[in-house]
Length: 557
View 1 (cartoon, rainbow, N blue to C red):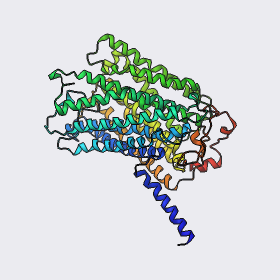
View 2 (view 1 turned 60 degrees about the vertical axis):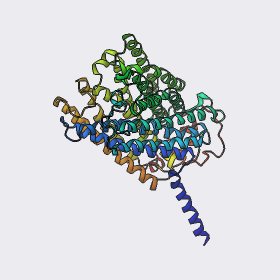
View 3 (view 1 turned 45 degrees about the vertical axis):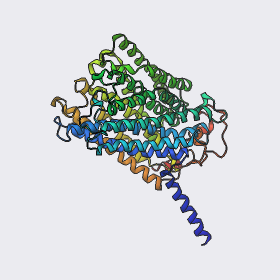
View 4 (view 1 turned 120 degrees about the horizontal axis):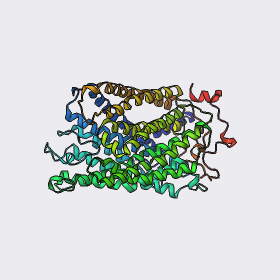
């Protein structure tokens, strides 16, 4: 064998190993991060297909596309997959990739635990989706699975869709707890020299706050799921009202986690906005310390808001008033963040690249979601729109529009770092505008139709609501189409995209101080941090100009 052919063989083996490692039990946090992102994106596509079937059913008033039993299964698994298999784990994947890089560490604190936590995700997801194949069909009690509906077993099968739903939630909950322990230990114990708390990027602050919340509240949901499984499978009576159980207790346990879970999801999204907006305005993040502390403020206050989901569940008046004020209190720290982003953009030199478009779009979505959230915090208004599509619209503006926009912003922003290639800017902007228009067309009509009284979780409705539902369904189909340029862009750019420099955005942050993609242990030598984050006024970060020929070439225009 000649020297040349030996070299080619070695390069081929390295490349083969490079793609094969994404299908193995790998302990590198960067590989695990990408495993999370790709796996959860597949679940996102599945949940999106389920949602388009649902909107296909709702485009006409009568129930004429799927039978009602299947419709119940579709919306149950759509919500469950979107929350537990897309939004939460995809943010974990993003944090997995970024946190060690951002704090100057070589890896996560417990690499093997990290890998186990990831592999529980596909196991839980496949388990959940397999319930469609059962003779009894999938779970039909919604992603909240309130008893007594969720403990009924009319088919009589010992293993039914609800049993599978509970087992998968327990598996996914264990994965999240493992991840939470790992993130907290990594952030608290493995920061580079000089990186004290007020030198950490805001994304690190938000992940720290979210994972504290996760570890404090998630055991309540996992415990409730185990108790519900015992009621369903072994005849215990924790929540069975006919045998002395208390179904409202389940609601308390479920919402004690599931409302703070909104902040577990949205806090890292806020972190993404706080990274992207300064980079594309060339301004330091306004009020950095206030934004950092506000992350903890949101985390703390959100523990005391779960009862606002139960204003219509026989909750005493004194408790309604107490939780109405605690719910509205969340608006203060979240308002601090929105003000900081706005002030950062104010009078700046904006660069409207794709990550910035998604970040600004996400902030707009969050403002709409936040305003409708404050409205729902008021007892009288909440009782008026209880169980209507207004709640669905608000929920999707916060949980889907804001967080998915943030995820797309993050993927475009750190794509050069992850792959060593630049994405195509033109396709990225097409993806943004299709997504922004599609998302608003889908979810805004739910607000007025909810105010008019259309209840949720139904497959047929009064014809007076048809107009708004046609718009929402068309928006959902457009939203589905919007994903196509995103996938095409990333696949083609990964294969033949322009080589990315180490820091294409001239951004601050340790992750940009290493190669693209980073080496196995992230840095040749552990860096020492001497500057505050977001030091965009300094000369080394003030030379970006996306109008020059080199930058244009990098962006693929």
